[in-house]
Amino acid sequence: SFPPYLALSRKTFENITMMPSSSHRQSLQVIILSARSSRRRRDFKQCFSRSNNRIALSNCQHHQLARKPITHHDVLSSRQITTSSSFPSTERTRTTTTSIEPLSSFSSSSKNNNNSNITDLRSDTLTSPTPSMLQTALRAPTGDDVLSEDPTVLSLEAYAASLFDKPSALFVPTGTMGNLCAILSHCHYNKSSEMIMGKHSHINLYEGGGYANLAGVSGKLVEEDEDGKMDVEDLRDAFRRDDDDHYAKTVLVALENTHNMLGGVAVEKGYVDGIGRLAKDEWGGEVKIHIDGARIFNAAISLGVSVGELCEGADSVTFCLSKGLGAPMGA
Figure 1 (cartoon, rainbow, N blue to C red):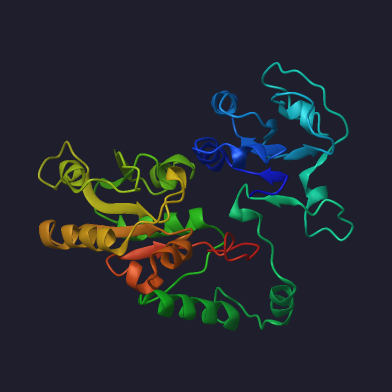
Figure 2 (figure 1 turned 135 degrees about the vertical axis):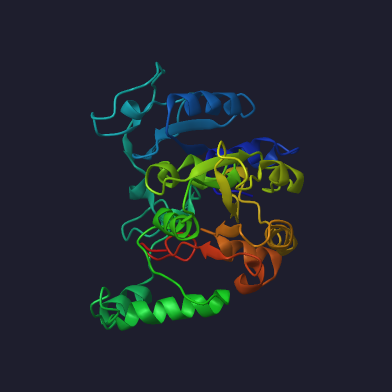
């Protein structure tokens, strides 16, 4: 059963509302969701029609929660649930709530918390460093990383490379930067390069188009199935050789594991190895395989394999330290 107050993402909420049994849904008193646009708020409303729960919808930058349960089935705009007037309302809604406060005031980590029954599952980016992690960071030896003289960074990079059985690793501030570094390193062809990636991939949707405006790489989008996989035949159709000046040359295939927009599904080793063999055997090794593995450790645990084994068929992989691993930043 769920705790009385539960903060969820849209995808997780959809999965709950699709459950055959309604007993789980009825145990929830308030659901807090995030939405980046008015279109997504409309999508949420469609989800709400399948649920009898009282619901609060917040702007993704200012998640808020009323101390008292919402008195009727309602959707709140960002103006109505945030103390900041800088976020204007994007749609007309009804209001019958009182005492709006930040969700952070309900956090189970708060020393003065009287509402420890709220479980926040909106995102694993909400994880925080443990006290022992903070103490370790304070005591860590430092140096000039530009001159490759920071022992902590060098140790981290060496450890990451050994975990994934790769020649080397590079510490960067964000996963988006990590993906961009990989794309730049693979796509240095002397004319237009093209990368094949999933239509619903994070690189395509949520990384500012950096592969195009910073790396100068063309993108070829392929639809994924519900298991987060691009069909091999679709990849063959998308592949383009350097035999026609009208085309950009395929030099990279980007996979995602776990696949964020498809419910966090873990993609098994056999599929990754198969794409690697496709690139080496059929495409002569000229096409590289990159894995956006922001949550690759989650996939490895789910599949019962090491991250090194899981990424064996790939030439590069990016993973985040700031999500399920709990670090404040880094990839």
